[in-house]
Image (tube, rainbow, N blue to C red; front, side, top):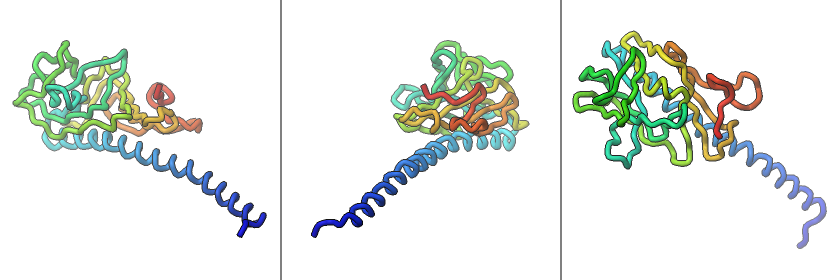
Length: 212
């Protein structure tokens, strides 16, 4: 039996509605996925702050070396211009040996750990509290101002004074409208990037988040 004109028109109308629903639904799934990933990092920051207060000492978060590297329990100090990648994950630890950083040869000013050439290692005397594995390989997770803020150090007061920085998470599309960000203020407070100007892209500390 052939379709009538009315049946064909109804079928096309339903197909059109379904097609329009697919894109918004996929956007929702993608945004939820990205939001979940960025929340994991925010949770780490809150945990480190809580532990610093509870233990009455400094708790540090640093970028983790690639899992396939010899020292995957080491802090990555590599940079590309003024940015550094946190895509390999991160380490939360206590500088038990009091050498001012997560490895021999690292130096600290009051708020920042700066590598001296070789990747810093978490020493045997240091206590690792948590380690987060790599994020999805097709995502990027970059931090700006990496040359002045190689790691995050929460003091016993709960503060982490130092340079402001933004962490930007980009999904495989590299479309900035799907990017999520975390902003660390000068006193160590953390807030999520928001789209305050209504252009569809969240803002970091230096303007719209960028995935290029």
